[in-house]
Length: 224
Image (cartoon, rainbow, N blue to C red; front, side, top):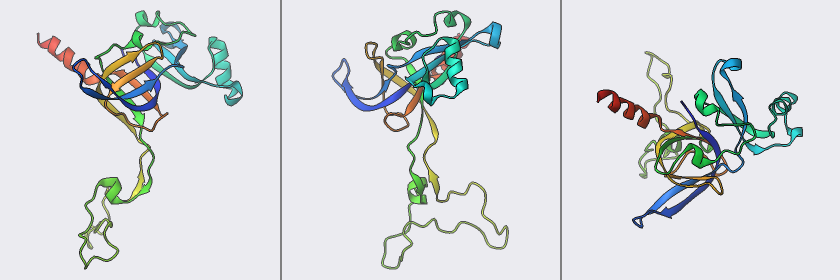
């Protein structure tokens, strides 16, 4: 089962735990998250729940999108994602329901958070690949941030693929694993995750149960 939800990254702040220690957290807003559809075994050969985030005006949708929401009896949403669930859990969701964070996750649970990193445009090798650059001596002229030699002589006489060179930096999908849920605020439908996650403020993020911790638990159970 790969339950999860989608939300907007609000930004970072800090909270105090029971011992009085400061915990840096990322705030994820799911206040507009609703169930907009379901996948069933009878019709789709698998089971999944479809979530929608951020209300949309019908004029901003294609006719196919508007028709799909109307057929399901759900409010139009700008962002739609589906998550696999088993048949028993699928029965607990109804189209039009507001999704509450405390119904899917609990405080202290480990999660994986996926986001799209900030776009940095075209960057050189020092910023993109952390190259050291050249020495800042009086003999270096306009060559402090150059990549240096990139190929060979006559043999093979070409640049190898995947060479670290200047280019576009950012806008990559990045998953930060094993983050602890520091707090849940069901009233505002906010999740506070310990640490930072990829992406700018107001960027879309996906929160799902930690894959590796589940595998470790299954491995320990099998060994017993």
